[in-house]
Image 1 (cartoon, rainbow, N blue to C red):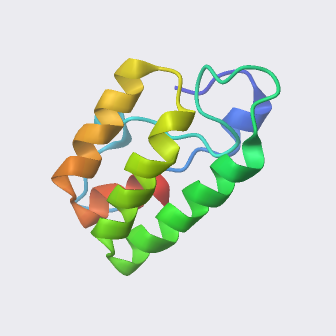
Image 2 (cartoon, one colour):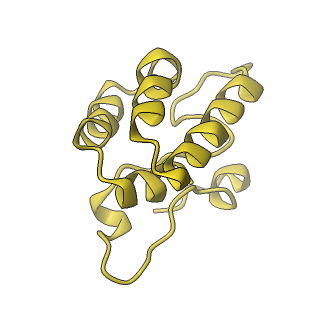
Image 3 (spheres, rainbow, N blue to C red):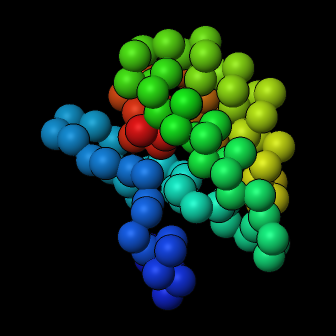
Length: 103
């Protein structure tokens, strides 16, 4: 599951809690940059949006999570299959799953 790149290994954004889906079922959203991001990727806007999405997920504001994903964060990802997997979870809108992804 972990890649050798230490920036990725130490900052995965997924927590597992009793009674929730396991991390193997969910797409991995990395903190520093999306998978396959090119050199020079603008980390700060990505991280700020990810943090805002985490706060919205923690508050149960599913509409805000969807808005930030659709308007900003999804366009920062380069892997179309990963975008589709995350989009599916955002569309379903399960608050606990969104917390696991973004919080």
